[in-house]
Length: 440
Picture 1 (cartoon, one colour):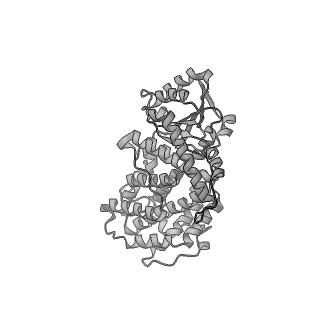
Picture 2 (tube, rainbow, N blue to C red; picture 1 turned 90 degrees about the horizontal axis):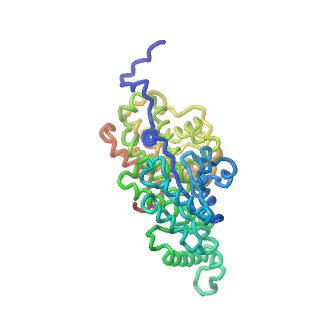
Picture 3 (cartoon, rainbow, N blue to C red; picture 1 turned 120 degrees about the horizontal axis):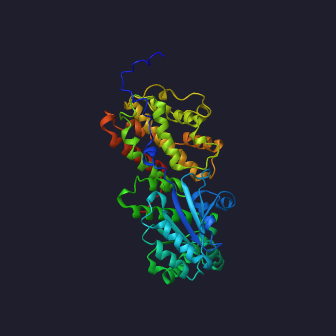
């Protein structure tokens, strides 16, 4: 076999593949393990479906393992980063329930093998005694949340009772629903004070109905805050936090923040590092693309977001940055269905200014397009993705991103890695415009 031509660049060892940042952090194969407890009919399965995007009711019929009195599910096809236990609270199995909870949350169990969070689903009518017994075992060992499920069933009757007809008031459906939600929230605050305030465990109201979608986001983001608080200073790039962030499918801000955390920990600040320089540019882009797509963890039955076709289209979204003069956006039809990647991705990655600018653009553009998809779809199709590309290319965000990157002062990328990562973070936050996450 003829030797490869000399490029003048150091070659990474052939035996060492280019690992993405996620591959390094998640080397232990973490799955996020959650225990969901509640009385039969309290909405446990619906809650799991709303937050993690899995059909928990279908899994109860097809792929589960009974452990003591709990059902353990690992929905690999639907959500590979999730493993959940579903547990019914009932008097006849009270002792087994307490034993199981203790065995899965005790401090002697290795972190990777134990339950990482407990949600206790309750209704306003629950007396709280059986639930408090469970809470007394798990509180302090793992993050615990009290979830008042079926928030809508309390809110809608209050909506019907609201007065109308006062001059100057907004009586649209959305305005009235907002007032009813405030009343229902005050009611549940009172229930919590009477029954559970002495536990010190946070409580969230939730409903899976479409007009109450924000409650699922609030539950997800409060859970995120409790997990990070529990883990302390190591939470930002720990395997457990990443497994949780990737498993959840309800919070856009968590996905964006996780992209930033992983990128700034790894390849974003090392776009001129020895591990990239000398490899094929396509291989370097693949590592970055893989990290971002896996973090968003869409329900993507055809795996189009990981396909060569989507990556080719994304390289052409970047392509106008190669010209030193920022050009007008190319027509959408010049990008969709491209059979060849853009020229900038061909050849050896040198880590020079142009390489780094193209990588910065690819990262920010990809996160923007996935962010747009998240707002629009539950299950991804090729048409959905191409429509998101069309909207992004046809709008003004891409041109603003590319102009900002073109104007970014960059002379020696090898010594400016932190500044590059910070600029990517700034552009992602400015262009995706996610609401801030609560501080841990």
